[in-house]
Length: 456
Length: 99
Image 1: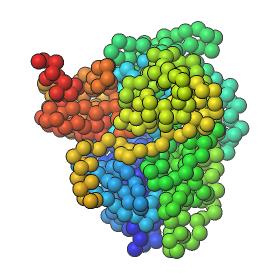
Image 2: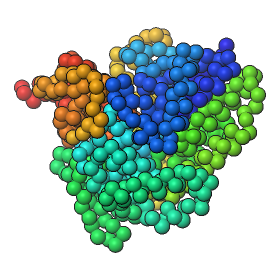
Image 3: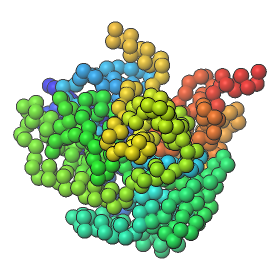
């Protein structure tokens, strides 16, 4: 039986495992989390009485279906929770679980590593109390907590109103929802979104819910600064008329849509192309998720498409693996069309809720860019201003250490790309692409030493 | 800083932050257990600014804290455990400050 490994146990990974199991394969499903579900369909831990039907509303049925699917599969596959893949080379994964390192050979690899928030820095964004929008949802779904006692949701994303409405419904005090995209831009995008009216209607429903709850919802604002000495005390915004407004709060949820987690795909040999519509480097995949020799990508880790696209693309990648190994039929054409349609829709959303890339031109030198290494925007500009200063992101990283810290540029990468391009006066893709490096996440030195001994 | 929206039915757990005894609930992440008791997780290695994590999903690596036995753990993906002795500053640097 071929060794097929799936990395990531969210909707894409679970559906891929299901499709492989249906053909008699027993895949290895690696999950960095303790329970399957990924971020969006994260299950509350035992002892936390979270009302999923209330929290997830119309999406609750899909959540339950995915978890039922996994429960039925769990003993029929090799499920490995709490396991980090930190490197990939020569058809081998390097994994660590509970301090023990191991290697894992594969005949085919499906990478379904999901996504995180894409962030653009602003003054005060490293203060305690500022969390990503996705993080604010994790706090609620995984821990039953609000990120603060009085919260502002800001940035630009369809998830802003969703997350704020979930918080409001559970009794949170929300100071404001501040979306940097003008309302008009969102209306103009509506025709592009018409092929999925359900999602558009849900978004409008959340907005109405917030307005009924008396929450100020601002569109088209500029985010001026998060203020506070040692923690968040207020958010200052500039409204569409140019008037500054200050919202007292002790927590801020910040997000500008999602970016795929591509570092393992990068190490596994995926090629990348710059997508000018979403202003991101994305792995090159064919219609079924093939990204290279024995490498397949599925879910939001390859292209942002949301949970439905993740499930469909997980199934599709598994079909491609089976077909390429001579086990199954060619991937299903209807499934291909469904994945393509859902991803087109998400791209429409991403364009409507724009990533405010121009901010990287105007943000002050003292604003922090790299949280890990504490590198400011000014440090990068000064390094670039030197005679023969770098104009390529990997060179800028080597000289300034921006993007070299523990997160490996996961958080600052997109902003660094925009900063280098705008400061050099070149197109973003001309500034190069921050390369992934092993270990993709920190591992203990002791673990790394054991792994090296095991290999030699 | 964090506020509990939904009360857990799990057992209470006692642990300490910089030597101060605090209480949490079994099953809570160390990040939540700390941030329901204090308003930051750690002091940054460069400059000492307070930090409280950022992504809460194991991606940003901004929530690594120190244990008194010298280990380091990522607070958002580590569960709080009874008698855990957590530090918001590296134990060695703290010793150096006292010297």
